[in-house]
Length: 224
Ligand code: B16
Ligand code: MG
Image (tube, rainbow, N blue to C red):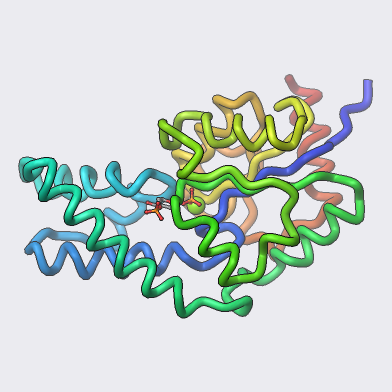
Protein backbone atom coordinates (compact mmCIF):
# COMPACT_ATOMS: atom_id res chain seq x y z
CA UNK A 1 0.00 0.00 0.00
CA UNK A 2 1.26 3.51 -0.84
CA UNK A 3 1.36 6.02 1.94
CA UNK A 4 0.60 9.53 0.75
CA UNK A 5 1.75 12.56 2.71
CA UNK A 6 -1.17 15.02 2.97
CA UNK A 7 -0.05 17.48 5.63
CA UNK A 8 3.01 18.89 7.40
CA UNK A 9 2.71 20.64 10.77
CA UNK A 10 5.55 22.93 11.77
CA UNK A 11 6.64 24.22 15.13
CA UNK A 12 7.25 27.99 14.92
CA UNK A 13 10.08 29.19 17.21
CA UNK A 14 13.38 27.75 16.04
CA UNK A 15 11.89 26.08 12.95
CA UNK A 16 10.29 28.80 10.78
CA UNK A 17 11.48 31.92 12.63
CA UNK A 18 14.38 33.07 14.81
CA UNK A 19 12.35 33.99 17.90
CA UNK A 20 14.16 31.41 20.06
CA UNK A 21 16.98 33.97 20.50
CA UNK A 22 14.46 36.59 21.71
CA UNK A 23 13.00 34.17 24.26
CA UNK A 24 16.54 33.58 25.50
CA UNK A 25 17.33 37.30 25.75
CA UNK A 26 14.12 38.13 27.60
CA UNK A 27 14.61 35.28 30.11
CA UNK A 28 18.30 36.14 30.56
CA UNK A 29 17.51 39.77 31.39
CA UNK A 30 14.88 38.70 33.95
CA UNK A 31 17.16 36.05 35.48
CA UNK A 32 20.01 38.59 35.81
CA UNK A 33 17.68 41.06 37.55
CA UNK A 34 16.55 38.33 39.97
CA UNK A 35 20.09 37.03 40.55
CA UNK A 36 19.21 33.63 39.08
CA UNK A 37 21.77 31.64 37.09
CA UNK A 38 20.70 31.11 33.47
CA UNK A 39 22.68 30.24 30.36
CA UNK A 40 22.32 28.70 26.88
CA UNK A 41 22.42 25.20 28.36
CA UNK A 42 19.50 25.83 30.75
CA UNK A 43 17.73 27.58 27.88
CA UNK A 44 17.59 24.29 25.97
CA UNK A 45 15.15 23.06 28.65
CA UNK A 46 12.79 25.94 27.82
CA UNK A 47 12.42 25.17 24.12
CA UNK A 48 8.84 24.35 23.23
CA UNK A 49 7.54 24.55 26.81
CA UNK A 50 5.11 27.18 28.11
CA UNK A 51 6.09 30.52 29.69
CA UNK A 52 5.16 29.30 33.21
CA UNK A 53 6.93 25.97 32.77
CA UNK A 54 10.01 27.87 31.54
CA UNK A 55 10.20 29.98 34.72
CA UNK A 56 9.65 26.88 36.87
CA UNK A 57 12.62 25.28 35.05
CA UNK A 58 14.83 28.31 35.81
CA UNK A 59 13.94 28.18 39.52
CA UNK A 60 14.45 24.42 39.52
CA UNK A 61 17.92 24.84 37.99
CA UNK A 62 18.78 27.33 40.76
CA UNK A 63 17.33 25.01 43.43
CA UNK A 64 15.26 27.95 44.66
CA UNK A 65 11.66 27.68 45.93
CA UNK A 66 9.06 29.34 43.71
CA UNK A 67 7.81 32.80 44.77
CA UNK A 68 4.11 33.40 45.56
CA UNK A 69 1.64 33.02 42.67
CA UNK A 70 1.27 36.78 42.26
CA UNK A 71 5.01 37.40 42.13
CA UNK A 72 5.48 34.42 39.79
CA UNK A 73 2.81 35.77 37.43
CA UNK A 74 4.43 39.21 37.58
CA UNK A 75 7.79 37.76 36.51
CA UNK A 76 6.15 35.89 33.60
CA UNK A 77 4.43 39.12 32.53
CA UNK A 78 7.70 41.05 32.76
CA UNK A 79 9.51 38.51 30.58
CA UNK A 80 6.64 38.60 28.11
CA UNK A 81 6.61 42.40 27.85
CA UNK A 82 10.31 42.35 26.95
CA UNK A 83 9.77 39.46 24.49
CA UNK A 84 6.88 41.31 22.79
CA UNK A 85 9.10 44.40 22.54
CA UNK A 86 11.77 42.32 20.79
CA UNK A 87 9.24 40.65 18.47
CA UNK A 88 7.93 44.13 17.62
CA UNK A 89 11.23 44.73 15.84
CA UNK A 90 10.79 41.65 13.63
CA UNK A 91 10.08 41.77 9.93
CA UNK A 92 9.89 39.26 7.05
CA UNK A 93 13.72 39.04 7.00
CA UNK A 94 13.49 37.11 10.29
CA UNK A 95 11.85 34.15 8.59
CA UNK A 96 14.50 31.42 8.61
CA UNK A 97 16.21 30.69 5.28
CA UNK A 98 14.37 28.07 3.25
CA UNK A 99 11.09 28.33 5.20
CA UNK A 100 9.10 30.25 2.58
CA UNK A 101 10.45 28.11 -0.24
CA UNK A 102 9.46 24.91 1.59
CA UNK A 103 5.97 26.20 2.50
CA UNK A 104 5.41 27.27 -1.12
CA UNK A 105 6.68 23.95 -2.51
CA UNK A 106 4.39 21.98 -0.17
CA UNK A 107 1.39 24.04 -1.26
CA UNK A 108 2.32 23.54 -4.92
CA UNK A 109 2.48 19.78 -4.28
CA UNK A 110 -1.03 19.80 -2.77
CA UNK A 111 0.27 19.09 0.75
CA UNK A 112 -1.47 21.16 3.44
CA UNK A 113 0.52 23.04 6.05
CA UNK A 114 -0.01 23.97 9.69
CA UNK A 115 1.77 25.64 12.58
CA UNK A 116 1.62 24.16 16.09
CA UNK A 117 3.34 26.46 18.58
CA UNK A 118 3.32 26.64 22.37
CA UNK A 119 3.58 30.42 22.12
CA UNK A 120 0.66 32.69 22.96
CA UNK A 121 2.45 35.30 20.82
CA UNK A 122 2.10 33.24 17.64
CA UNK A 123 -0.42 35.64 15.98
CA UNK A 124 1.95 38.58 16.58
CA UNK A 125 4.99 36.69 15.24
CA UNK A 126 3.09 35.53 12.14
CA UNK A 127 1.87 39.08 11.54
CA UNK A 128 5.32 40.72 11.96
CA UNK A 129 6.98 38.19 9.66
CA UNK A 130 4.10 38.15 7.12
CA UNK A 131 4.08 34.34 7.29
CA UNK A 132 0.36 33.80 7.92
CA UNK A 133 -0.79 33.74 4.25
CA UNK A 134 1.74 30.98 3.53
CA UNK A 135 0.27 28.60 6.15
CA UNK A 136 -3.11 26.85 5.95
CA UNK A 137 -3.95 26.46 9.67
CA UNK A 138 -2.54 27.64 12.99
CA UNK A 139 -2.84 26.20 16.51
CA UNK A 140 -1.00 27.89 19.38
CA UNK A 141 -0.75 28.49 23.11
CA UNK A 142 -4.02 30.45 23.06
CA UNK A 143 -5.88 27.27 22.03
CA UNK A 144 -4.37 24.89 24.56
CA UNK A 145 -4.63 23.99 28.23
CA UNK A 146 -1.62 21.64 28.21
CA UNK A 147 1.81 22.42 26.80
CA UNK A 148 4.25 20.20 24.86
CA UNK A 149 5.18 17.32 25.38
CA UNK A 150 1.39 16.94 25.58
CA UNK A 151 0.08 16.39 22.02
CA UNK A 152 -2.81 18.86 22.36
CA UNK A 153 -1.48 21.66 20.12
CA UNK A 154 -0.65 19.17 17.31
CA UNK A 155 -4.06 17.50 17.71
CA UNK A 156 -5.80 20.86 17.30
CA UNK A 157 -3.73 21.59 14.18
CA UNK A 158 -4.69 18.16 12.78
CA UNK A 159 -8.39 18.85 13.43
CA UNK A 160 -8.12 22.21 11.67
CA UNK A 161 -6.40 20.55 8.71
CA UNK A 162 -9.12 17.88 8.76
CA UNK A 163 -6.40 15.25 8.41
CA UNK A 164 -5.47 12.11 10.36
CA UNK A 165 -2.10 11.81 12.16
CA UNK A 166 -1.20 8.89 9.86
CA UNK A 167 -1.39 11.29 6.91
CA UNK A 168 0.95 13.95 8.35
CA UNK A 169 4.45 14.73 9.53
CA UNK A 170 5.44 17.08 12.36
CA UNK A 171 8.58 19.25 12.24
CA UNK A 172 10.19 20.39 15.54
CA UNK A 173 13.41 21.70 17.05
CA UNK A 174 12.73 20.69 20.68
CA UNK A 175 12.68 17.34 22.45
CA UNK A 176 9.36 18.22 24.15
CA UNK A 177 7.95 18.95 20.69
CA UNK A 178 9.18 15.66 19.20
CA UNK A 179 7.49 13.83 22.08
CA UNK A 180 4.29 15.81 21.43
CA UNK A 181 4.35 14.88 17.71
CA UNK A 182 4.77 11.19 18.56
CA UNK A 183 2.04 11.35 21.22
CA UNK A 184 -0.27 12.83 18.56
CA UNK A 185 0.43 9.74 16.41
CA UNK A 186 2.66 11.36 13.77
CA UNK A 187 6.20 10.75 12.62
CA UNK A 188 8.65 13.50 13.49
CA UNK A 189 11.26 15.42 11.51
CA UNK A 190 13.78 17.18 13.75
CA UNK A 191 15.62 20.44 13.22
CA UNK A 192 19.01 20.94 14.89
CA UNK A 193 20.84 19.27 17.74
CA UNK A 194 18.06 19.40 20.34
CA UNK A 195 15.55 17.41 18.29
CA UNK A 196 16.23 14.18 20.13
CA UNK A 197 14.10 11.18 19.14
CA UNK A 198 12.98 12.37 15.69
CA UNK A 199 12.75 9.83 12.85
CA UNK A 200 15.09 12.02 10.81
CA UNK A 201 17.03 15.18 11.71
CA UNK A 202 18.04 18.07 9.41
CA UNK A 203 20.27 21.04 10.25
CA UNK A 204 17.56 23.55 9.28
CA UNK A 205 14.53 23.85 6.99
CA UNK A 206 16.94 25.12 4.32
CA UNK A 207 18.17 21.56 3.85
CA UNK A 208 14.68 20.05 3.37
CA UNK A 209 12.84 19.43 0.08
CA UNK A 210 9.28 18.18 -0.40
CA UNK A 211 10.80 15.00 -1.79
CA UNK A 212 12.84 14.53 1.43
CA UNK A 213 9.65 14.80 3.47
CA UNK A 214 7.77 12.39 1.22
CA UNK A 215 10.59 9.85 1.48
CA UNK A 216 10.84 10.11 5.29
CA UNK A 217 7.06 9.79 5.54
CA UNK A 218 6.84 6.74 3.24
CA UNK A 219 9.82 4.92 4.78
CA UNK A 220 8.82 5.56 8.37
CA UNK A 221 5.13 4.78 7.79
CA UNK A 222 6.09 1.48 6.15
CA UNK A 223 8.14 0.56 9.25
CA UNK A 224 4.98 1.14 11.32
P1 B16 B 1 5.09 32.52 24.89
P2 B16 B 1 7.31 26.87 19.95
C1 B16 B 1 7.56 28.05 22.35
O1 B16 B 1 7.27 28.12 21.00
C2 B16 B 1 9.01 28.43 22.64
O2 B16 B 1 9.90 27.48 22.08
C3 B16 B 1 9.23 28.45 24.12
O3 B16 B 1 10.57 28.82 24.41
C4 B16 B 1 8.25 29.43 24.78
O4 B16 B 1 8.38 29.42 26.20
C5 B16 B 1 6.81 29.01 24.39
O5 B16 B 1 6.69 29.00 22.98
C6 B16 B 1 5.77 29.94 24.98
O6 B16 B 1 5.89 31.21 24.39
O7 B16 B 1 5.73 32.96 26.17
O8 B16 B 1 5.32 33.48 23.74
O9 B16 B 1 3.65 32.12 25.04
O10 B16 B 1 8.74 26.41 19.92
O11 B16 B 1 6.33 25.84 20.45
O12 B16 B 1 6.87 27.53 18.66
MG1 MG C 1 10.48 25.45 18.80
